[in-house]
Length: 423
Image 1 (tube, rainbow, N blue to C red):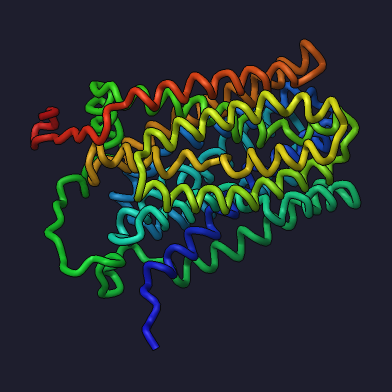
Image 2: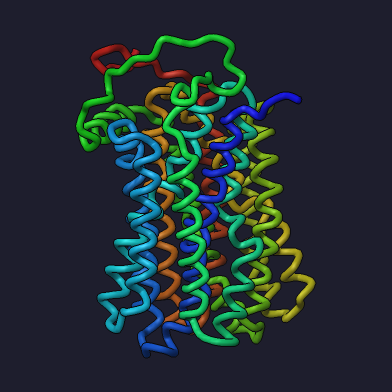
């Protein structure tokens, strides 16, 4: 019997680590109303804390990528998961709005940064030579797959008992994942005497960046990237990607559904359904990104997502469960299907060595969009007592993003010399 390559074990560990961090991030939608009820805080205040988290974990991405080069992958995963553990523990003791901002905005924002930004491309690049697109699709799908089972369960626990019970379940998951990382995670294929999956002979590796300051690495890469037009097009489209996914749907979808008479459990179940189809859609997107023009994949992903978001207000106002299910399936297929093509284009343009840090900066734009949507939708609700304008505007922005990606030049490769200048 052929032995399983250890790259698939690493993929398994990363997959469930990302799921754990993803459920913490996506659970914010479940906790908005309970926090309002338990503490008497204004919804815009709670949304602000979650917006800080979205922004901070995105901005931290390029620095996390650089820190991996300095500290190693395993140590970074342990530190990040331990930070999440500390944040969830502190949640049980918070009493003031500023504590929510500190715990969920800063601590949990930083703790989730590694898992939800650069871990997927790093694992795919370092552990896979063949089936890299498939591996990337599986890993990026895991960001939303936590919703597959856990969001409805969390919503039931909140309704039946209290938000603290749901937080306790999250705490248990973190402890389990921390133990698995400690026992089985490895820094590189070489550490277990292997080559990346599908690589037949060892390649000489440069160690130029290993001992540099991670802040220097992150900003030096950014200064090179901003000179390239395609960086701005990818960052702009990813800003809109974040605005139309985790910032809006992930934070406000449950509250939006409750406003139309749907229960929190029903809304969470729809998010769960999105998680099912996200797993299918994003894994398929990874497979497609190895075979088709990634620009056209992104064009269709953004266009179809925009159409679905503009359909949602009509689906909810009709009060139809069928329309809500149709939206959840259609939107779920496209939730983060944009990630594999975006990472592939980044790698084609900036090369293997720099692409993870560059993608970290592109993802920072994604999270800036998420933060704008999380905070902005809360303000729109406060002014209009409705989220409808927020969802309609997000749909329009997605159409704009489809135009950004289609003007990227096909497989333009930017090669940098030792001085860091584009050739």
